[in-house]
Image (cartoon, rainbow, N blue to C red):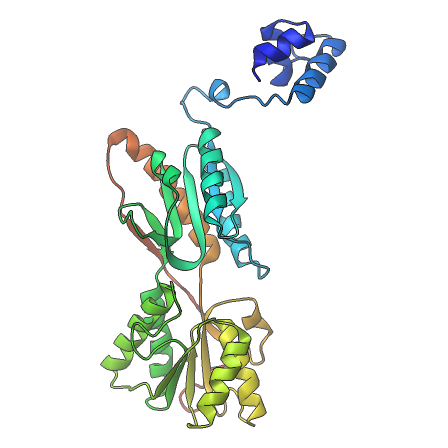
Length: 346
């Protein structure tokens, strides 16, 4: 359905139809009757104004597509989108967000629809850092991966959290707190491949942890790999651990695992941090509900969303100069101090 079809069915010129549908009818004194007729006809015919004719002189649509794997009830994905929206707004862009639910067919459809609408670029985001298979349509214009790296397109720009440094930060907290023995891992390990499937975060956190512990001469006593990082998994793994050991410190690879660990420790009559120090990752909302508040290495969700948009806009500019941006950008993971790690002398 074209603008000419709408004009013919409304009994007006193409120019008049265009002025009505771009909101300039009043400005140019087009009659209310003609305006109503054009709008009604356009709605009946299912006409949608194309983006090519309305692009600014720069040749851009000033829009960005954002394809998200899933929106979790925790709100973490919402924080990522919030950061992306704010960054886009600062640069005069609008963000179109679509959720795929992790369905490859929906991902392909969303990417194609955003390309059809002439978005200037697409951010393709995963919830939980992982290796992804990207839709073919992502190659047909500027694109950036968020929380993901591409299985078949290693050169595609990506923005991820600096999980290795996050692991180092977690280990340093325990080393500085004097935990030279009795350290146990909940969620992954002890080896670099003892991790949940498709997970990049677990592998990189393990690398950082093992590096600092090795340098400090600290040996991890045990590790309990969990297929999923849920409170139930943390509870079961910690109960199993307590049958064999009396831990002094637990590194939980996700705050939800730490929540379950708290419950198991409490049932065993052990206090946090008096008997056992507990450290988490992600700064999930559950971390602030725990007593004492969990010390955790935070995922910088808003910063990740904002950085992805910044990198994408840089890609848009660089394409004109035929310059390749850095393939992976890592965003620092800040420490969120709580009361769950016993300090020296405490």
